Amino acid sequence: MDANLMIDRNKIEHHKSIQKIFQGLESCLGELCDSYKKIISVLEVEKKHLISGSTDEMFLANIEKESLLKKISGIEGLRLGFAASLARSLGLPDSTPKLLDLANALKGQPEELVLRDWYQRISEVIQKVQELNSENEVLVVAALRSVGGALDNIKDSLAGKKTYRRSGQFKSGPEQSGNFISKEA
Image 1 (cartoon, rainbow, N blue to C red):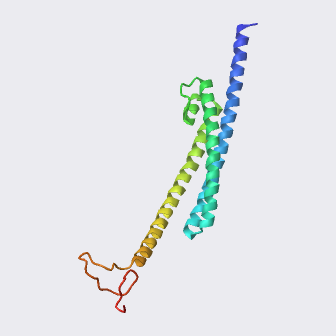
Image 2: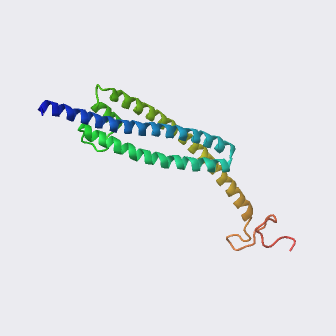
């Protein structure tokens, strides 16, 4: 068999292998992007319920968000595997390459533009997730402060006044809860 023909066949097989890995990577990127878009929807619903104070709906939104985060974690693991395989096939030294590193290694090929497009899309949805999450965090902190203040007011009103002063003398004051000795006694 001719050596050139053998080299050409090896190149074709190598190219097919890279294409198969690339398709797997692209599939994972699509699922990641879709899952992040779903999280955006859940965060918007969560924000609405934070504002309205609908705790049951917030709880359900949190359950859905947790489920999506677990799904994303699984997809991310697959993505990392495909990215590492593609990096090895392209002769890159990094076992956890970034999308832009892979795109640079594919310079001049159609796959380069596809990876750059995925990078842009995923960056945009992640930025939106971060923005909504920050907005919701501000609402949660404000709600917790409000609840904390209300609890402090309730605690103060239930505590009442102390019966004795520091000097050990009786303290005169209105007959409120916490006074053991009242004027009527």
